[in-house]
Length: 450
Image 1: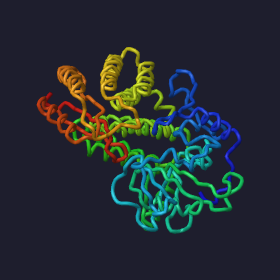
Image 2: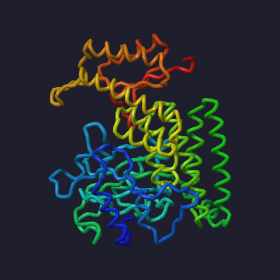
Image 3: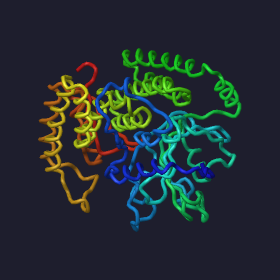
Image 4: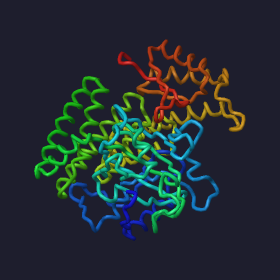
């Protein structure tokens, strides 16, 4: 990565630049796609070859990076007081956790498999994107100088499956020389990284040997199907945690499988879409709404041409956004689902719930709205709030929705009041987290007996 001097094709850069000029507004974690194709059956229309490289920009998650020529410190607008970790103690490598992984952090000298998108300070288009160089993740050995020093520091803090953002100062990136013509001198860089997998030096020998097997893809796909079916059964038994584990094992195998033909790639993308969609439903059941959105983003990166045909994926994504109170984006996703399945009553019901939830949230905002300069997260909520909340809680209990969310201050007494009111109706309360950090969003969920 540090010394890869291959230029991206001009067509790719032009498409990237055009797309990034319409980058999504400040929200973290929504997907931008540029597909304008017709609604023909995807199995009949999907093709891919090297000459269509620019089309792979559809797999990129365009987070807002900044405006060219602004006077902010590099990527400063992405950093808040609580969303980052200083990995070096001198702010030369900052980490923003986007999605937690599982297990232990990467051990020393292991081989890592990464997908990433890399940006230069305050420029809108990425300078390096694994998703347009091939769908297989890139491979690096830690401790060999194959990675930028700051990026290696960051990777060593990651766990399996984790998504993280690293902001790296020039001293631990390309330094005063840069990497012409793409990287200017003294450039601060940002990497959005997905740690797909990692292997020990001993296991990598077995991995390389297996990768020479001409039937490897079929063998991996058979194992993926096995994990997929096992996860489905676990989900039916309401063992959500184990189902999530199995789905993720299947994902890891698919990411590492690699494709040697269009037919293999189609099979891979079909299963990626199924797995991300099923995971989105698992996370909905757990009230992990930000993870649901992440699954939508990942599905669009890796299998966009199939994901865009999935009403179930957009339905789950839209519902999660509604419960996070992002009604504009929620409506967009639900409308995509409706376009695919216009007669689906569940989608029509979700549209009605969205409108009702918007009205509830608007009433709450009228009561709790304060000037941003005077807002106090620990201030107690007014009696008027509880009047509106109590009415809506009873309507929720007697209605057909399974989850109610509300934005609160972080006063522990108010949170305790919500818990007590919910327990009266035998309802469960979850404080919604984003990248492991508790937010002001509280979810109230009906128990199995409701």
